[in-house]
Length: 176
Image (cartoon, rainbow, N blue to C red; front, side, top):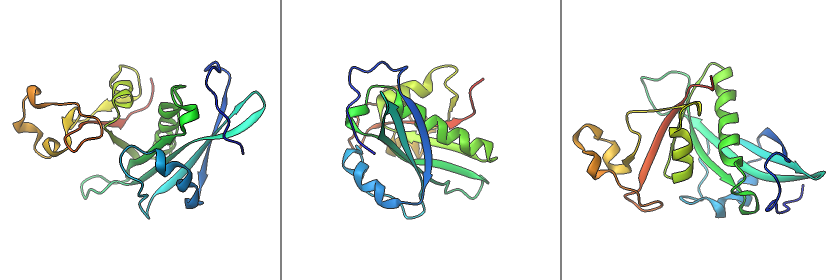
């Protein structure tokens, strides 16, 4: 599969596929483009996204998820890494592949959560009818989220990529 640029293509043109993969080595293609960490957890369930543009199938994105680390939530998973290759960013692929993985988990009877510091991802999920419901930890800086009840709205900040970055936290509930 080729990684050809899609800039200038109409959004309606690409036909996308999401493939579950056990080929963890594919992460190496995406790791340099993740804003936070290049590490992929060993327990990650991985998905590769491809799209067809003008008859050419290209690898465009990657999503991984992990079992949710909570004793109180059963059958819950959380998004771990979502990356869209630079040539395909800005086409709405990130939210689409994230939603597809969340939908897959929901059809398997699992709850699915996501936490991101990416402003556009967070803003998309905060929209009505996005299929995502904000959790009580939504829009708090990471260290503040541990004790959200003691912080005011004025303490909510947005320094994308820094230690004190604003985090968006959601549960996928499906599109109505």
